[in-house]
Length: 346
Image 1: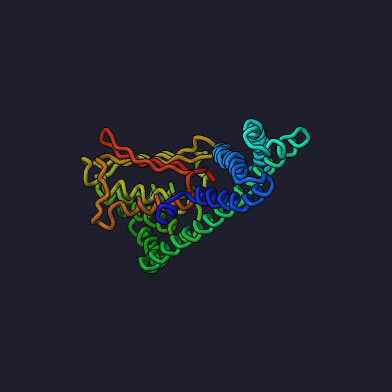
Image 2: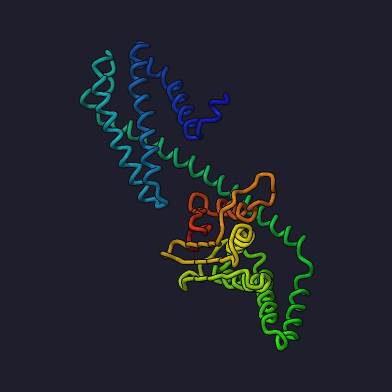
């Protein structure tokens, strides 16, 4: 039972389905061909070849999968017709070995009907395969949406626990900025950047997707605040292609990368710590993000619950939203650590 449960779902369906088909049709074969030996030969040749051909069809469908119904229907019909021809040739080869097989299946008037029968059977298997696949994908999609909603609720709950009347704080910062701007320009810029970053957080706290350009600007405000706080211990350079600004991304995506670079870069980098952010859209269908920091990569420490926690949460979110359609890579060489992300451009 444990071995059976470890099998991929396709193999469990395949073995169960063909096993049931052979068990149900074997008595009919026994009646038609008159002997157990002939019935077993027909089952081995017909059903065994059908089993192997459906494995080949499975590989073809996976290799040439497309969301276009017309293209997939044509592929199914063409593939099943070729498989039906192959089965027809196989039946002709084995016909002489059974006393009644050739007479019942491949006499001249009936070989075309047998071809259509086998092609129809393989087409039925194909449409059943796609029906089950569509149903399973629907279940997985619903599960992913539920997980995404759960992650969103958890993030909102953490935000509610952490915030202390943010609108009051935002208004207070504006008042402080108005009073200190003429006295200390540097401190005034820092307060303004902090207020702008807070406004961005308030405006987009409930948005599922936001334009990457808006987060990019807010992230620069965050870096300017950190630069003032570190008193020359931080340098940063940010670039973004104009064609990428309106691409939609799932909530906050740059912030955890920058925070990760500052937190762990300060532990291994010479002063000043340098941060580089690059956002580009190499084509209309994809978005590439790269955040680099000077220093050395530090592997997550299992005993520390918050080790690379922001990066782990981001990886989990991308996996839920873009399953099998995203890339997150970490590279480290020549004194730089770079986290690169590629996601579809929405």
